[in-house]
Length: 98
Figure (cartoon, helix red, strand yellow):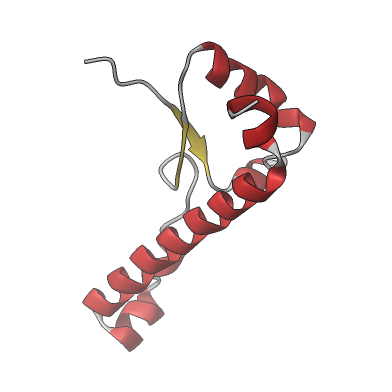
């Protein structure tokens, strides 16, 4: 159907990679995205650790539904931090909009 994208981790630092999206380390990624007319999708799926949000003591203290809700908000906020970094990094001007 023409859908394409690049799944990009929102926690590169835990993989030993630069967490700054404007770091020249990531330039090949942005170049490929431009060449493929594709967009990176920042997601917790690639390397996020959801286990911390569901620790037994957290579930016991907050209850199962509240622990899941807190985890969902935490994931959303971490993705927002990556979006903020992307907006401030200069990547959009240099690669996407340039």
